[in-house]
Length: 155
Image 1 (cartoon, rainbow, N blue to C red):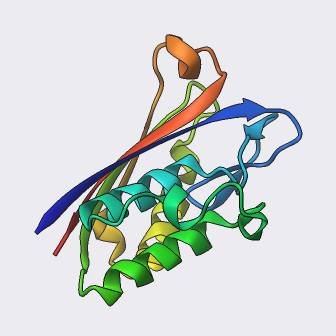
Image 2: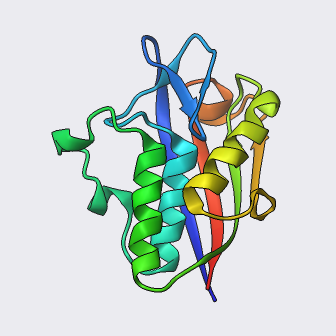
């Protein structure tokens, strides 16, 4: 059994879609990034790569490669899962947290869990996603960005 931790953060900007957990969420801003900037899926991908000592998503999907410009992070997560499966690893469970002052994410969590479970080829009951604010403190609390943490267990 191996444990991995992932973290990601992206700035909120106008004229971008807000994608979290592979779900498009109606909001006046979206996350800035080379791909779709899905901080939740990036944190989960990094946690899986970390648990299996395979670096991070920047190593596998560099932001200076136009191949990944506007990339769907669900597809990137599926690639990460294939990579770790090739080494014989199986995902046991995922626990993650999205940190955002706004928008409220409660109504989207079940869809996010479904997307993650499908991409990771695990039962939805093995995927937990939480959302919290930072009580208006720091860059997330001020609405300047969104961050995410993820912890995974692989066997």
